[in-house]
Image 1 (cartoon, rainbow, N blue to C red):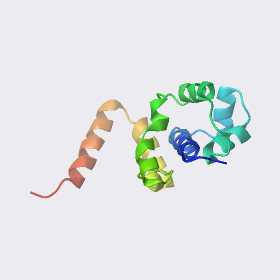
Image 2 (image 1 turned 180 degrees about the horizontal axis):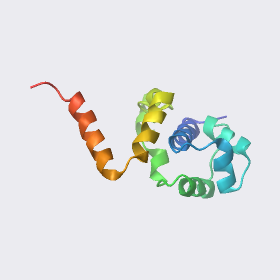
Image 3 (image 1 turned 135 degrees about the horizontal axis):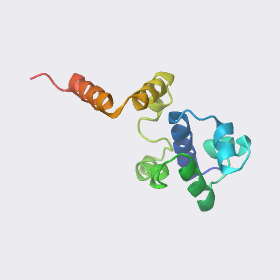
Image 4 (image 1 turned 90 degrees about the horizontal axis):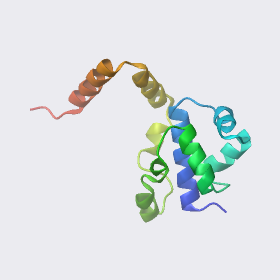
Amino acid sequence: MATDIDLHLGRRLRRRRRLLGLTQQQLALQVGIRFQQIQKYECGANRISAARLWQLAEALETPIAYFYEGLADALERKTPAASGGEVFSRKETLDLIQAYYQLEEHPRRRLLDLAKSLNAPAT
């Protein structure tokens, strides 16, 4: 039976994989397992061992701490979803993030400044 922690880690795994534009098959090949195992991790059906979490973090180019971000809040609320989880599951969000990271550094900074200014309160 999946615990709240397993579900949280699985959701973070799915989010990071999708942000990088990887399929379950591609990620599985990188860590030497079958894609079905990635599916089981992502839905919380199987626990991720410490060694496997290390491999996944390396393959996804992220620190292990990424998987635990928001966990304390999720456990406190007794819901496994991290805040904003629905936003990151939308295709348009993933498309925007992928397009953003395809830009060079200077245009990326300018785009971020623009987005922040659009959300700033009117003075």
